[in-house]
Image (tube, rainbow, N blue to C red):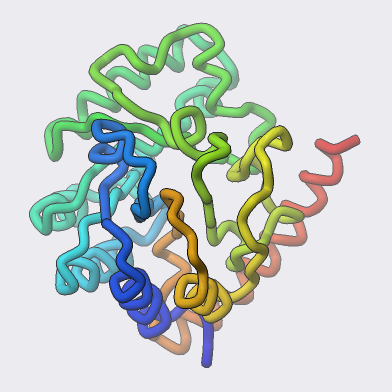
Length: 259
């Protein structure tokens, strides 16, 4: 079975439902701070928001709410899709990259951040944010918070600070178009100080098998990039080829950062 199709994603969702996971948006998790068997579905809408809407419709059909983070750039920021996803009951958040867009100028970045946050709040009362990795940039977007406090402006959570790097949670991301893509992963990963208590899975089928057979009781965040998930054969092949090229570039960047 081909990976990164909507069919396999549907199987993933159904396996989580059958395993008894409680579905929460990231906003809901931040409010409740659940330490039980909960699942937070997070989607980084880097581009092609039409695929995010298809994914959101699939989730809504199963009675599932998820969190969708949109970038300010045109390839992500398309109001019709943002509105449609919000109407389905999903959480909308800001996928910020202001620090890299401002070439590392914290003052300019923070002013842009506040303006962009206000913009996305015209669609949804945004309470959570998540950094965009900007792998081609030398700037880490989280570095803006070395100067400013992200919990201001009504924000209650940021996954990389408030969830991912805890020792009492699990985190799976499809960065690199696989679930174990650390060698291609510039910034979307846990800190080295976090205990690696979760299994290494490569494919979505392996992730599903882990869900079906695991006795896990910890909260889990699953992060996807919806542009990777499609049943269209031509688009699937194009995404596969493009991601392989990106992975080669990212691997070089990761190796350089490690030196």
